[in-house]
Amino acid sequence: MRSEGIPCYSRRLNLMSFEIPKPLRGSGADTAIILGSGLGPFVDRLEKVRSVGYSEIAGMPAPQVPGHTGRFISARLNGHPLLVAEGRVHLYEGWSAAEVTRPIVMLHQLGIRKVILTNAAGSLNPDFEPAGWMMLADHINLTGHSPLRGGPHFIDMSEAYSRRLRSIFRSAASVQGTVLHEGVYAAVPGPQYETPAEVRMLRLLGADAVGMSTVAEVIQARALGMEVAAFSCLTNWATGISSSPISHAEVLAAGRSAAGILADLLRATVANL
Image 1: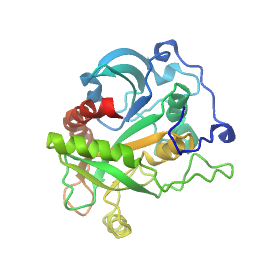
Image 2: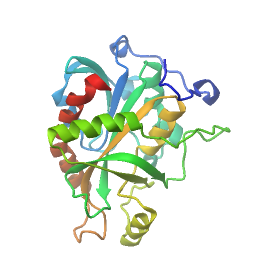
Image 3: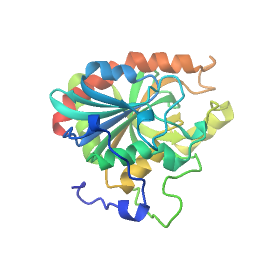
Image 4: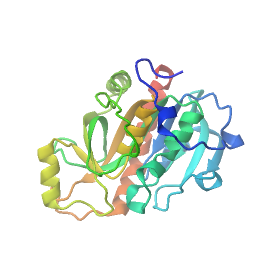
């Protein structure tokens, strides 16, 4: 069963079919979360049941970037079944958009209908300080890539990020007293960080945060009829907003410290998703 009002195009997309590993079968989960850079400690808050590495699944690309473990975890959160993809691969590693989104395709084959994506991002909005979280309300795809390339797959993206899910998370954050920004995420190809001129351009375009992932996965999930929510861990100020140079170590450290906030938010909402 798919989300009401969202067409499912899986038959037209000619997607890869995966041999599902035994540890992931029969989890009963219909919700999954994909963890971005440095957010692996989130899994420490879960009741882990079974796990399997990406490299153990034929056709599944395995990440090589620090902070991306590369495994699927069947777990429970507050007693509710949840599948977790710990880490992802990126366009800048040389993978195509179709390859980057294979975890989404397999999760759909496992019965997942709601997916929560997370990433590490640089803050472009002077009101969104680092060490906080931004819920994505929309995105700007500047990567030049789409997983739907290869056919006339005209998927509606007017509500890429579910209003229903955003309302649930917004209410939970308010009850908890958690500051949860909402804004526009700009996806760039990377792997280099942005120049000050590029940051000025992104701000003029209306972006509140910038990163190198997530958007291809959102496009693929929507094409499969999945309901989507996404969150950026704001790990640093973008270049030019702060005079300090950006490092991947800084990004990972900020992600580790912020993982608990996300866990608390999901714990409060998982029963209502």
